[in-house]
Image (cartoon, rainbow, N blue to C red; front, side, top):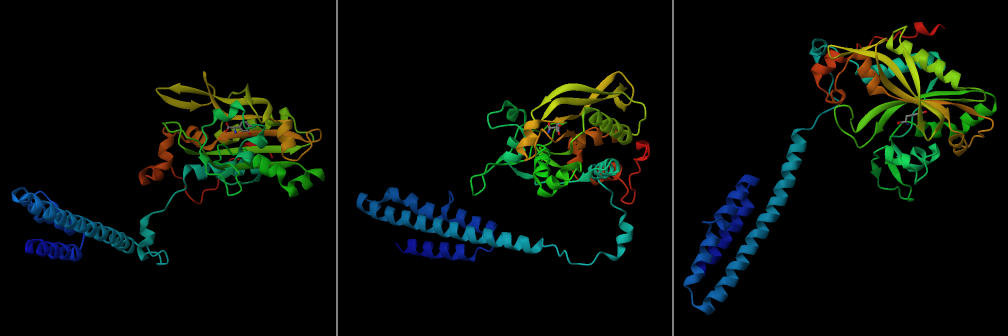
Length: 370
Ligand code: DAH
């Protein structure tokens, strides 16, 4: 019996004294392990008379539970303080001044996605487009319904959507699957509606992040698109064609290369098309320009009258075109980057190789003849 209280006070004392999780585990093994003190008591039970065994067995079991509970509690508190220690040790003081040897560190570079966004701003800016943005976390109505994709529409299955918990008021939320919801946000903007009513014309590009449940060499769950939208009273398919052909020539810096529009389907445009650019493959390497192959780079079309009406404008008065293009894809094509996933690896060697000088402003607009 004495044994029992000695083991009890030793074990509980050792639990309290354990300074880290390793020491605590040693205490557990010493008491409850195969050769542990409590396990040793269990082994003596067989030699006792039935009554004594029942009584002693109950006390040993209770001791075992008591030590287990103490181990658990100590483990939780040591774990919490280990985390606190680690947080304190790894703390970064962001207010420290830069290092005196900063000049020797070498310069950073612009990521190709940022570079291409600058190029888009330069080229479309020259054509009179403004830059617009919208939220990455979007409600279902702007992402789908406003764009003529009602809840039961099969086109919802075309995009592998990340669904989010609904907002407090029950509004279903998603990570936007395309930049197109910003078309709706822009048309719904009261200042834009007034500008249009006053006879102005709306031209915006919307570069930004988009999200789909998809991951392989040519798809990442987060990627980038740029949306384009033009709305006024007279813009027609010919304008769409001219605008996108001009863009392709300026962006890819090739004067003579084949571009073709192929009929397609999108719920928010009618008619709809996809644009392909000419290319060729030589020794496994892709070349943009005249050749015997085609690459699809964007979807486009005349904005569907129902999308215009959903966004508070009269489709009998207003019309225009829209397009949507993958930024990562055109960056890969232009700069010969073979694997999409490498964009998001943050590998310094890759960034130095494919990155751009921060002070170089794209001068791609000469070809636009303005
Ligand atoms: N939102 C489409 C997609 O992600 C791309 C697109 C197609 C955008 C046609 C447009 C458009 O504005 O007119 O697949």
